[in-house]
Image 1 (cartoon, helix red, strand yellow):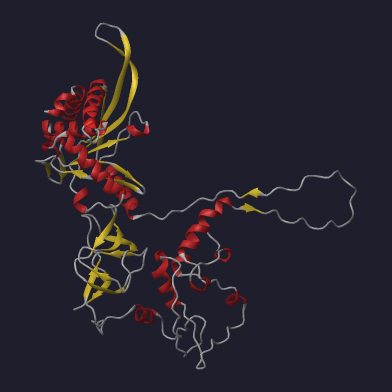
Image 2 (tube, helix red, strand yellow; image 1 turned 180 degrees about the horizontal axis):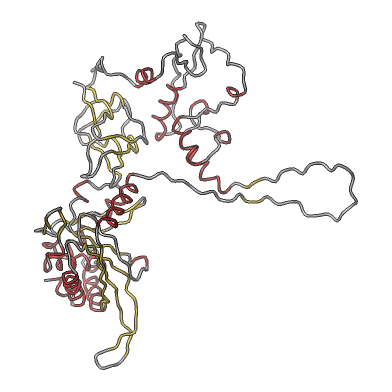
Length: 464
C-alpha cells in the first residue's frame, strides 16, 4: 500500500519547515531509520528519518521550498507496486496549474510537448532541480520529430537557459545570468553556477571604456601611463532569512518587548576555580579522560544555585508563576547560521564530570546539525558564555519562557587588594544575570547571584 510522507512537526514552535536537501533520490530503497532529507526548522537544521520502508517513488517538494506541517513531501511504494491512479505526478500538477490556452515554451498552440532526453545532472545537489526545470521548459516538436522554428525576435534569440531556482537566486544576488556558463544538461544554468558567480563578483575588475577618437589632431604631449583597471566596488548583499534566523529574530524581539528585564552583576575571584581546575585536569589527563572547562564549572554552579534559590528556576504563565521541580539547564552554543540552546536534563542531580561530558556531546551535535527536538526543548534556565571571545562583561537576553539567564565573561588579571592591604595580581571574572521582573524580584536575583559567587569562589563545593 502506498505510504505518503508528510512534513513532521520537529519542534514545539514549528509551523513550517524548509526542505534543505533530499538525502534519498527517487528510485532509492528506503529502510526504517534511514535519513530521507534534511529539514530546517525554526530551531535548527535536522535530519528527517524514515519510519516506513519502501521505494521512494516520487517527491512533491523541491529543495529550498518552505512546507507547512502535514504537507505531502514524498511517496513510498512497495517493490512492484504502482502509483495510485488518483495521485497526480509532477507533470500533471504543472498542467493543472497552467491556464487554459497556455502554450509550452518554444512551441505552438495545440502541439504536445516532446519527451525530454535523459541527462545526468551536474551534481547531486541540483539533480532534482534539473529534472523539474527540464519538465517546465520542454520544447514542442512536429510530427517529423524536428523542433519548430523559433518565432522571429531578439528576445527568443537572447533567452538564457536557466532553472527557475537559479533565476530566483540570481535575482536575489543581483547576478546577470547572461554572464554565466551553465554546467547543467545542455548548458543550463543551475543554482551552483549562480552561487559561484555571486562569490566571484566582488573580485571582478571593471574594465576601462575606450576613449572616443579625437576630433582633430592635438599638439604632441608627453606620454602618460595607460589607465589601470579599477576594482569594482563591493555590493551590499541581501541574505534571505533562514528558519533559525527568523526564529531568533521573532523570539528575542518578543523577549525584549514583553519581558521586563533587570540586570545584576558581580565581580568574582576566579583564582580558586582556576587552581582547582588545573589540579583536576592533571589527574584527568593522566587517566586519559577529557578535561574540564571553565564553562563546566559555571554550568554546575548554576544548577546548584537554582536548586538553592528555586524562585530563579521558574516561568511566568499568565495568571501564575510555575516553579520547576528540576533544573533543565540550557547552554547557548554558537553554530554556523545562528544559535541553539541544548538542554542538560535534571542538571542538579549530575556531577560536574557528567555535565561536562553531556554538554560536549550536545555541542558537537549542534554544530553537525544532529540535534533532535528533545535535545533543545524544555530548558528552565540558561548559561551564555562569551569569555572565549575575550568579552569581559555583557548581559544576555532572556530565553522565553524562562525567567533568568547567566552571562559569563572572560577571566581578567587585575590588581587585587589583600586582607593585609597589600596589592597583588589577581584573576577576576565578571558574571551577570538578566531577570524577568514578573517572576524574579531584585532581592531574589541578588540571592541567586550571591549563591553563584559563593560556589565559584569555593569550587570544592561543586564536587560534593
